[in-house]
Length: 617
Image 1 (cartoon, rainbow, N blue to C red):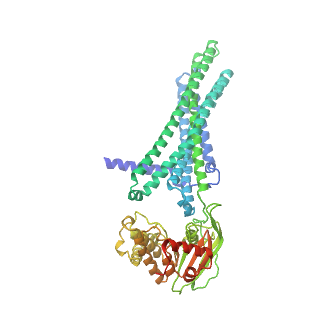
Image 2: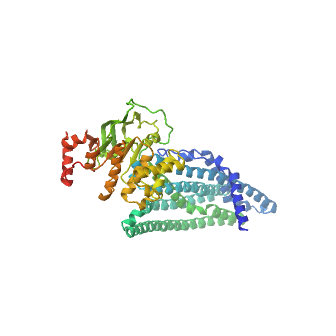
Image 3: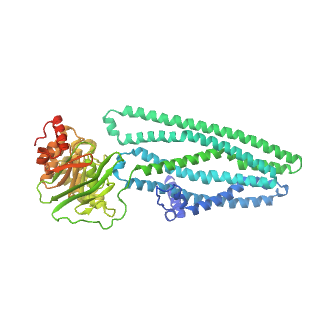
């Protein structure tokens, strides 16, 4: 019996899939977050118009149908049948409204979800590191719900009330001018009171509730993604207490807002009762003067109650509408300020501009580079870097040294386009990687990148971390990718750790896995961004040993490092950077033994004072 029920439910599911056929009828619309948020709705104006017209007809009918019985001559069965037949037509019209309204809603919501995902996917990674992932998810989630709420409120809450009131007031004006005018004025006063109270309360609470929600979501998502670090640092209780504090903050602000809104509804209900009393007085006066019959008077009062009672909710609905608009604007503003997409990573590549380089060299050229996080934090301001590295050269390791925050890591990120300069151009082997037509994914396959913080997938083993790029990017078969991954893990001395997960590895072992991952892609250039900065002193040696082996194998490497002894003994050339300026560039013998610039001498002198002379190892 249970299996039969499951089969029926499955058949029912596929029946509706075929009947609705939304795969053919629904579409994802492009959204430009620099334009007005309503543009995605206006792109579907035909659905909006059809839905609005259907709602106007159906709600007017539901508001005034009691007036059908005002004339005693119509109180016959045949007229009742006419009413039922017309009512059937109205019900079908309601379904048409729901159908087109649903299409409008699902296309808006899902277009927002996809386009926001696409935007954040294409924004330069640098900006993601500067923002909370929890806040990002919270804002996208709120905005998608806000689009749904916005359309629900307009189509199914505000429009019905407006058309109902218009229908009631029109009928009253036709019946008695004074009655119609009084009803219109009373409804206007009630709506004004209700709207004012709700908007005033909304202005007082909504922004504070959004901020409290952001604080909680930011803490909860970031804490869950960093749960291993939190536990290892014995901070679980502190994080839980902070979470409770932020939840309480959200709860008491939201709860207080609900009470304030409930008070505004109560005041509106009392005002509505006053309007019923005034209209009742007028209706009974008309009955007493024989201007209308008792049956007509009862029909008028029932029509008023049936068609206008929802006016006491108009303020709440407008408040919800404005809250939805606030939340949509919140995401649009957040996206506009989030960061820049300085490289069109999703567009089809065009012909890549090239410059001539010798066939037997690896060339890195950066010209007139400008980059700044803000006007007060310039990293590069029109600087150049030229490296022409012969392939047959024995030592091809280039070190970048300098004080923290001077642009060393930014330079590496500019080379492989994880960060794109605000202006200027970068070439790798004659191909301009900063050009909008360059295939950045192809470029990155020839550049390996090793980060400070490993960037391994915590849910994947060492083997899976290394072979993932081979399968997804290079389209290798799983068996072939596994063989290559095993080879690279053995190369860095981790052949016995292939099944281990990052949490089971030391910091040095994790960094060696990340080196193996980069090597597996077969790069011609390796970029190391302070590969030992996150390691204990005892673990630094094993990573440096791997890098020395790579030097012996002829791998070309560009290394940002504070290990000056390693840089002096292994590097072929040293670049000293400060405040975005390439102060000095030369061999280790010259730069460490007899630097030309005073600032280089000052920097090395301070390092020597702290750690002793940077002698050859």
